[in-house]
Amino acid sequence: MNYIVRTENLEKVYGNNKVIKGITLNIEEGQMVTIIGQSGSGKSTLLYLLSGLEQPSSGKVFFNDRLINNLSDKEMSDIRKKEIGFIFQFYNLIDNLSVLDNIMFPIILNGTNKKEARQKALDYAKIVGLDNKVYSLPHELSGGEQQRVSIARALSINPKIIFADEPTGNLDSKMGIEIMELLKKINKDYNTTIIMVTHNNDLLKYFDYIIHIKDGKGY
Image (cartoon, rainbow, N blue to C red; front, side):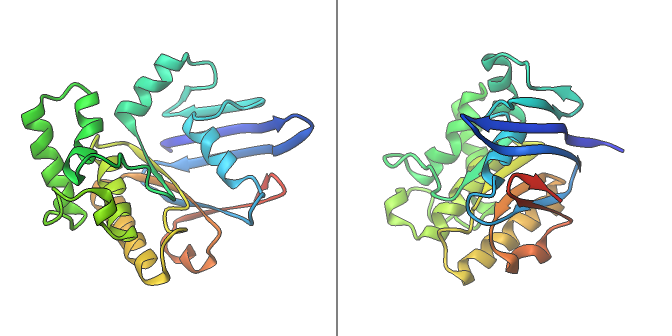
């Protein structure tokens, strides 16, 4: 079995508060996975541990069978630039850059020349249905459109995995469903593993694997 992410007895402590308590997971390549739980349950912390944005207090995290706990900041940054995409609840777009330039940004960071990066960004804008908005600024877009830009940006490096922290949390239910349908399509078309945090039980039908978090424990 090819596990793209796995953990062994993962724990995270902040001060005297143990937020993640001995979680062991095996996530297969190409799966659509959700981490679900109430606010304060530890679900976002678990996502950050799996993606290497946070270091565990104890236990192990493996990405493609590589232990990432002990990697340097540069080594982890190189993995994130080339193999991991991120989508956040509040989009995290660069306000003074157009849709096209926001999507181009990580492509250029990876060393692609500007002409090729531009064409790739146009292709990804089309995939998410924004080919008619490529010269718009983020504030000129609806929330759903801004989230589509962030999805295109995450997809633009052709990542093995996308981590999504409450990507529908700032959207109405109709737009949230549209975003979920887009993520599911990306998962199927590109075999991209998606690990997403949510607190919305109505979205569970989209996932192959559900990780319930309660009081820092997974089940």
